Length: 453
Image (tube, rainbow, N blue to C red; front, side, top):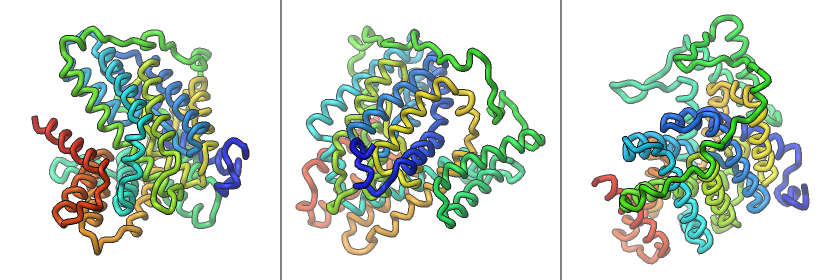
């Protein structure tokens, strides 16, 4: 392990890394339940998507572990899977037989383009060209964003037609137990108990089972309220077949609709690129993996793992694979090397055979971890400089504010970077702008133009 992952150099141990990998997996295991549900809306087989998601996640995460040696796990990106199912398949391709086959083709093309961009170090240059203040803003924004995800997952934050968001009911066991979980994690961290986040998830889950057994937590499958007690059968240990989605591409439609296909590919490309960049920067910052110049060593390998994972996922039958912001929970537990990612990837394989256990962990249990990790990442805001250069200040500010308020990491990065370039030009500091930032700004401008038309 020392030879493979250089544990001593990163001041970590096998136990710490394994615990971090388990924590990361538990905070992102929900994707194995959510992704099949979302993609099945487009006509895909639910079981096939489950298996494809687990396998593609494992493949991409193993590449991250052994080649990049970073504690970052990958899986089907949230937001990208919804775009795949509801925008591409049920809107843009509405009325076409098996539209998901065309969408999978678009994901494959996107992955190939990313591989090419990674080979020529275009994505790597973008990551290393982002100013430090903007990086801190992105990190803080991701913290607020994942905390918001946690608040939603537990029902603490709910929809309100008048104010957009409101406070959930304290009569809900999910709300109460999630808050208990957050406090438990905070208390354990105060007393420096190793694996506090993991133990917090498990404690919240156990309390949830007690609530179910006593009748406080009422199971209602039709309303999306599922039992937290795992149920097993002989067939539950056999992974579902992926025969219906394996290499199920449809390129015949593209010939007569090349412009529409390009827009679909670009949309996948845009969101994936900047979601990944934002996630990688945020996690690397919290793990102290950035060098003295604020750059991430071997970032090209990180981005290549993402690109290869996307291609593998398309071939197996799932939407775009991307770096998961939930990896920050493992980093918060001390994960610093690829051993953390290796552990997470191995658990995705295990999940194929023991899915009833992993899928029984309720969202409000993992929400407690997300809220606490969001607090830790949001603390990067104290490193930002709000005086001095206005471009740095406003760019970082817009990045961390826009992410949670528009429910998109990519949007936060778009507003942050574009405003940074514009303000640099308007304040006579064009010499501070790296050439690649001009390219990024033009891409964002084009993205806004496509949204307008």
